[in-house]
Structure formats: C-alpha cells, structure tokens
Image 1 (cartoon, rainbow, N blue to C red):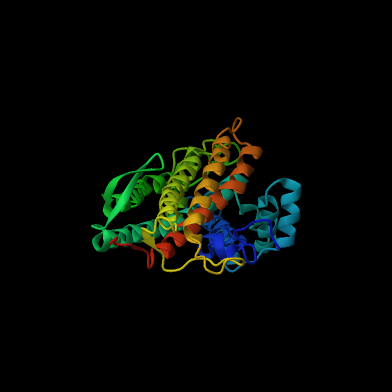
Image 2 (image 1 turned 90 degrees about the vertical axis):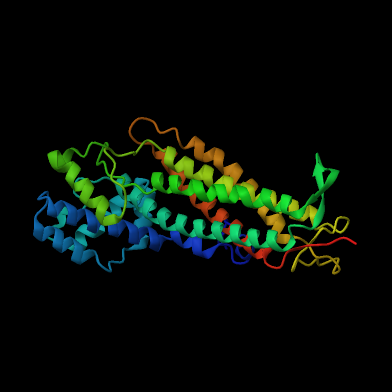
Length: 353
C-alpha cells in the first residue's frame, strides 16, 4: 500500500506512468550520483587536484557499486539527506590510500542537484516526444474530421456553428507552443551543480574552473560560472512548463467530456468507463483524468514557487519541498500525455443529419 496514487497498486493504472516514475526511483538517483562521483574523480585527477592513481581507483571501485539502502535511510533521517552516509560507504568501498580523494571539494547539494539534472534531461526528452506525437495525432484528426460542423459555445451557452478544426486547433496549438518552449526549459535544467561547501569551490583553488568544465563535459551538462545552489528559478520554470502542458491537456479533456455528453453527441469515444450501477453508461474517464491532472499540477505549482525562497546560500526547508513536489508534477504530466494519446486513439467527431 502507498499514500501516492502514482505508484498505488491499482490507482496507478489510472494515474500512474511507470516510464516517467522510473526517473525518480532510488536506483536512477543512485546511478546518477555515482556517475557524478566517478566523473568528479576523473576530472580532478586530470587537473592534478587528486592523484591520478586515486582517480583511477575511485572510477574502478564505483562501477557496479550497490549501496546499503537501509544505511542511507538511517543517514537521511539523521542528516536530512543521504549524501554523508553514501560518501562514507564510497570511501569504504574505495579504501586506503585513496578514500580521502572521494567527493573531494564537493558538497551534498552538488551531488543531489546534479543527479536530478541528469535525470530531468532524459525525462524532458520523453515528454517532448510525447507532445510532438500528440500534435501529429491532432493534425491527423483535423485532416479527417476538421470540416465537420459542431456547435460553438461561449460562456457555456450555444453560440454559432464552427468547424471541428476550430475546436481541434485550440487543443493542438498550445501543445505545439509548449514543444517550442521546451528547448529553453531544457537549457536551464541541463546544468552542472558544482560549488562545494558554500558555492565557492574553495578547496579547488585556481583549478576550480577547469575541473568544472571537465566535469560538465563528462556528464553532458552545461558548466556554470558559479553554482546555483540557492537560485531555483530553473526548477520553478520547469514546474510552470509542466503545469502549462497539463493545463492545455485539461482544456482538451474538458471540451471532449462536454461534447461527448449524451445530450450533445458531437464526439464519439472509442471506449469509456463502465458504471457498477448503470451498465448502459460509457463514462469519459480519460477526458476527466486530464482535467484532474491539470488541476493537480496547478495546485502543486504554488508550492514550487514557495521553494524559490532559499535563505542565504542553502535552504534545507525549501530544497526538501522541491523533492516532494517536482517528481509528482513530472509523473502527472507523463500520465496526462499518456492518457491524452489513448483518448485521441479512435476519437471521432460525429456528422449531424
């Protein structure tokens, strides 16, 4: 049993998205953190910050390493985050005389934020492809049914007849714009977080810039002139984009649910949900879930904007709030895109007369 609908044993069938959720699994997080530590050791060894032999020993020792999860859980309870316990395990794994070179010059936030950046870059690629597929599906729907006349409505009242293409365009075009915005979102998210204790990389001295460039290159991220530990506009911007996507899909779902009403009959769904009491019904489950997920993300967005308020150089409270909210918003967006694709499959506008 779980408190989250996204990985609930049966509610996840309606609201979950395993492909997206995998990016936030413990395994994905640990794999990304280990990639950071190996790349850090290699970059520092290349610049002479740590001995060459230490860099090689760390990279070799961490390949295939599986940490003690129970120990990480205890450490997180004690320290507020898993990194101190993880680094201790890594040092033990590497052993003497090279353990003192593990995680050298870095801090916990470097590790956690870079892990998240690595995973979000992969996730955004998937979401982008799903949006583009939906746009193509809506283009096909326009080509087939766009000339069918339906009733236009303003203020929930019948207005004048409009072509179905007009309805579809109000679903398609925002998604196309979100796809165009994605490049800027990815650019802001796909950065290296590396600043050391208070964002100054003080332990690396005049080699800080070169180590940063090497580390970013190895991880496929963009190097920053200074760490953005307490500047969270990129994360809030991503949350805003996620909410925009689900909001646009929610508008489509709301329209479809209204047009599929028995009294309207302007849209025919390929399938619908059954009723335990009224077996004649075909409920527009997919359309309703698009509305639900839109409202869910819109609600969580305010929390992500609260997480912008990082006091001084690092905030435990605001940072932890991100961990609670952003993964849920991402999975909700994945679920909405998956649901929208299923909803459009077989959907048709009905010709009158």
